[in-house]
Image (cartoon, rainbow, N blue to C red; front, side, top):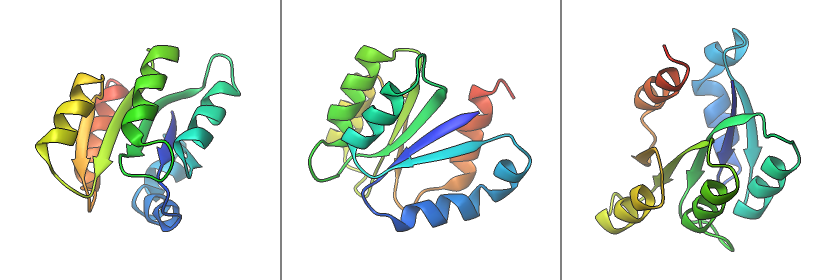
Length: 125
């Protein structure tokens, strides 16, 4: 299962690879990283249909915000599940994300146990 992680902080890649290494090693998960909303849309648009089934994105990024990207993904690729993560557990961002079609909403630091649960639910496990 291919997952796209979108965050403007590059150290996030190491964190996700470390926290999900068992799932990656066993072949359950394949992680792809984008460091901006624009880059994420380019990755999704480069495959037809996209192989990515789940996008996990930060909300606060320079340029295109995670919420703007979410709206575009939902319009172009309605089959892709998207969860948002924010450093602030504010209800405004939460409401906007859920209204725009986000599957889940996480706050930083990411609770990887919850994230793994959400991913395994997608896999029907």
